[in-house]
Image (cartoon, rainbow, N blue to C red; front, side, top):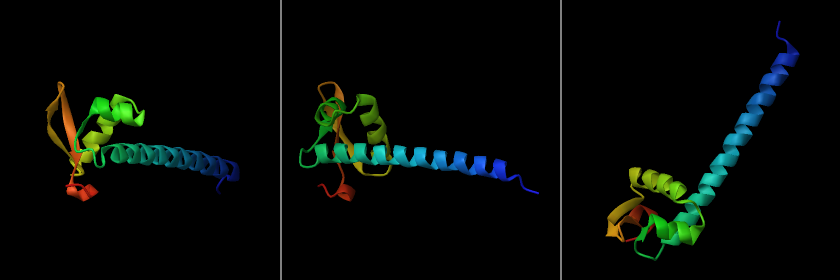
Length: 95
């Protein structure tokens, strides 16, 4: 026989974990939108420039850029002021 208290605890724990993941995903999406908005139309930008424009930490920008590069959404365009610069690809509507 299933213990109803144990089952209720498991459901509450799962619900809390799902809510936590949902919050993290929304934050991630909001950060990504800030980065993309800062990059649109500007040609290329460095991590420092994007951090200044978005208010996000450089480490957060780096994580997003690594992911965006992995999925072909951004490219390295060279080095500017001793930093790599990046631009959006045509997958993000840029040329």
